[in-house]
Image (cartoon, rainbow, N blue to C red; front, side, top):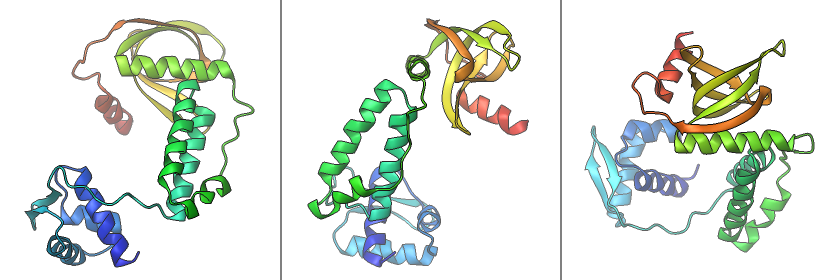
Length: 225
C-alpha cells in the first residue's frame, strides 16, 4: 500500500470511530506503530483535525469531511461479491436492498471504474434457492430486529417435529446453511436452528433484554463447548 493510500485509510478509520489506538491502526494496516505515529503527524500537519495522543488513542473531530472514497479494483470485487451473496441467499427484502446498494456504489465510482462492477467474475447463483427459505429468513430477521419471540415447528435430523418458542438473537451462514442463534424455552438453553428445518413460523410477543440470554451470552456459551 502506498503512503498516500495509507494516510487516507487512517483518516477513514479515525473518522468512523470514537477512539482508535496506534496499535489498532498498525494491526489493520500491517505496519509498525512508529509508522502510524509518523502518519498521524503528517495528517495533522496537512490540516486534518486529529485529536488524541500516543498511548491513548486518536480521533478526527466530528463534522470533518474527507474527499469521496475511491475504491480499488480489489475493494470493488469484495463489495460486489458480498452484495451478490446477499441477493442470492439473504431473503427478498435484503436482496432488493442489496441491488439498491450496488447501484449506489456504482454511481459513486468514477466513470473509468464503473466497468469493474459488471466485470467482477465472482458470482453467487440463486437458481437452486427455495423462495420459501428466503421468506423464512426475512421473517426471522424482522423478529430479531424487533426482539420478538417466534413460535415454530422444527424438524430434527430424523424428521421428528417439535414445537419451539424461541428468542431469536442472530442469523449466521455456515457451510451453505442459514442457522438461527436463539434461546429455546423448551430446552431452557441456547440452541442453533437450521433454517431449512423450520416449518410453520409465527411471530409472538416481545421477549425481554435479559441478562444471560443475550447474543454475547450465546457466543460465550458456544466458545465454552
